[in-house]
Image (cartoon, rainbow, N blue to C red; front, side):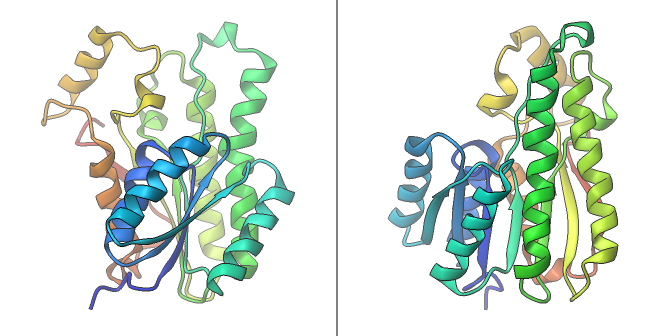
Length: 245
């Protein structure tokens, strides 16, 4: 029996990219998926339609994870519809790459609000509402180890997520695991925006597979981490980067 059958899984930032691929894959495995998004109703609807066209079970909820009241309302809706929540996957994030001396106060604040405060908000709600034996998976990034120019603020938000996750894994109890997945360069709109073909080719060459990851590559790592087979893994960062670092 597939151990995702009837699991209720909330995935923030799942209207497109890695989040959307993850939502679709987990729904195929029998999970009941909650698609969270902040702005693009069209993308969220496309993800929802793709799941339902394959016979899957899903709903979509618009909520800005940086706003605690919207997060509380989202969790309340999940519990109203499904009666429980088994897994929280935090994919929501933004990236604004600039040379360090050009970063504005808004660039700094907006990235910390979504990338760090957003996970803080959802994990606090998970403390009270996640099922015993549940799972929390937070998305970090392999950029924390790559020291790429223009990534100072984005990478620092991801480093904060990793440390927050380690500490929460020791506090939450009830058999709940807390881990991070740190993808390497992945072919999504968020990653490709503003990057030259030369730079992309350079990154491809850093992996022994000579390519960027596809969203589906990362979704398969999530699938492993939400399965019952990962129950003895907690407080860890899983580097899903094709050997790039």
